[in-house]
Length: 275
Ligand code: SAM
Image (cartoon, rainbow, N blue to C red; front, side, top):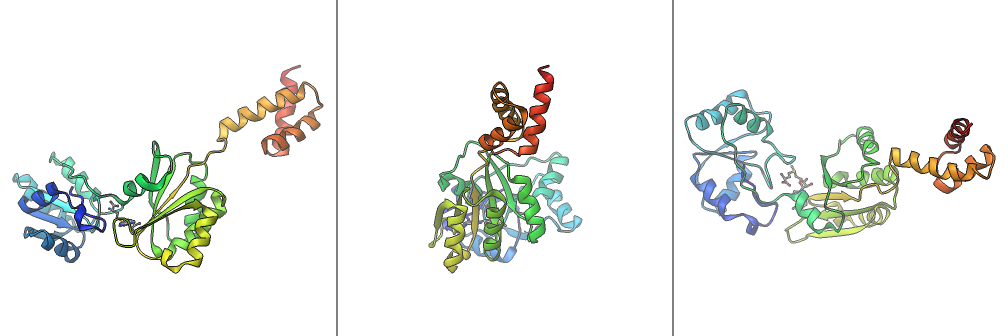
């Protein structure tokens, strides 16, 4: 699995060039695009097209070469194969057939963006492309609203406005985010700010709706499910020592931002438990 540049040809690693020159066959997502790249590096190895919807015959062809002890390289249009790119089916079949699958690491837009975003990078989730249809995208975002790890999305330029708007609606517009555009290329731009600030910038500058984009969003920092319950219980326990149930629930709602009804029910349970 050979990574290729995501824009700047200077990022092609020497080992990738050497391997692409010496393998028997190169399987590429788009032979025309990869042909241009290979030409730049004087690589004239036989090139065939491969994507995850390729016919079974195409996969068999690759496995035949591997089966007779030959080497095959898989490349995608840009970056690391399998990362929002073809290759999974081929790797799976190769492993199932006891072939050795080896990485030649290099560029990946997601990690390149994370390395400069200034967002927590110790734990992160890569979500790839969100669904193109608004309703499905919003549903996917709802499910991620309480995710505490930094979120990484790939997004197409013509959808960036709609996605930023949905993110603001669902995550809250004060959530910190980063738009990393055209990385390693002439117009590389890294915009940091709240979702509200990014939305404003994108809506008022058509250039920010162009090119290739990685969108990163700070993870949720509020109290998650069970932590929230513990906090409600702690606050109520203190208030119930001094106040009747209704007043304690009302004050607890004001202090924690929790729902008044839910806190009232919890206050009732706590007082019953203590009698
Ligand atoms: N396999 C690639 C990788 O390792 O990053 C990703 C392929 S995916 C089909 C293409 C998407 O990656 C683009 O739509 C964009 O979201 C992101 N991308 C690729 N190159 C980029 C770049 N130079 N700057 C920002 N994002 C990039």
